[in-house]
Length: 528
Image 1 (cartoon, rainbow, N blue to C red):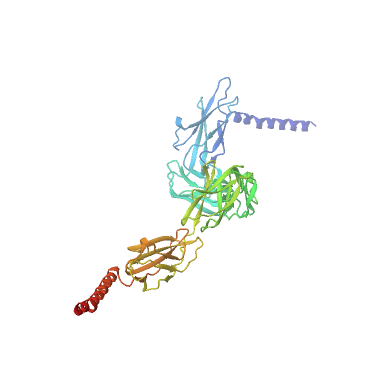
Image 2 (cartoon, one colour):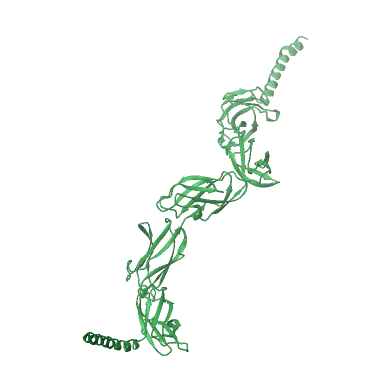
């Protein structure tokens, strides 16, 4: 029993002996700091934990934190990054943001007012930041490199696209702090996070801390206003790769469906502006994986507009004018080439339809307008046909024939009929030579236009004296399209000129007089 008691005493003494040296060692532990994290990219927020500095026991004791920016072992005031008050045990906790600095180790130094100091290393690593971090395709972003080697060269930056990448920039050079910057526009990309990475002369892709850009879906319109029936193009970006069943919604109603995105989440579709009254409407889209709530809605303004059916034709065409996007219950005046041709009234959806016959008008484009209270609200264009009619055939007088006997003659000219949908009238020209151009004779003696039929008789003022003449005819339709002139055909007016006829009469009269004198008057004189 006594033996067990003695053993117990010995064991207790040993334990006390082992504990005694530990207490002075605890008391002698010096100040120290711990960094969390102890490595990262400039801009990283680091927490400094301090232990065993001078305690704030009634007096405020502050610890200043320095970051050896220049890596020269000196602690300058401009390298101070934080300060903190110690607690009753001489401990503290404070954070700081790692300043811009090139790759490698930097000492973080802590010193209190009693010159108690401690330090710990922070390892600077290269990395990227991007601003903004989330937006749509087409956004201009800025990528910054931090913590690269001092004056590092040949830095290339990549933007990754679902297993592939596009090169953002090449041959960038960092400054003396290992910093650089480049801007670019986010290319067509699928919805979600896309990595950006870089490498340089001294930094590998594996060493560089990546940045990421979050692509959100978006839509855009070819134009943000239009009229009923107009075709509008919409494009989408940032959808899921090969996403199907994409639908365009106009005022919550589907106007185009079954669109499919490509591998980069891009798609294009079109729709006709629906028959709604004038005003502003919401336009959006949704797909197999993309909700309409994920997309920022666009606004589209419907204004008054006209649709012509047909929008081209000839004189006499039955033209239907359909209007949309007007205010309901409006009286509308329809004009063709400035002349009123019809009236209409818009219905409860701001639409109307009216038909009229296209009047005679020149070939080319003519405006069809819709007026409300004397103001033009909408315009559309009707194209009048520009095909000339065929060339007629000359019938009478025949080539090289004679018309009339003496004096001025008034022959009748006849030609074949030609057909044109716009209606036809004719032009006749007569000249003393057969010099024909595209405009007709060079010096016509007679020029008559707008002849309704296929024949024409010269009037008294147009009568032709004795001589040889040439004549041509041209067909012109109701749209002012002129066909070609016929080939010139000749004819002779009269048998003798008037002076020759009078001379012949005089000669004949003189001959008769002479005969009478010799055979009648002179014989009587002889016998008597």
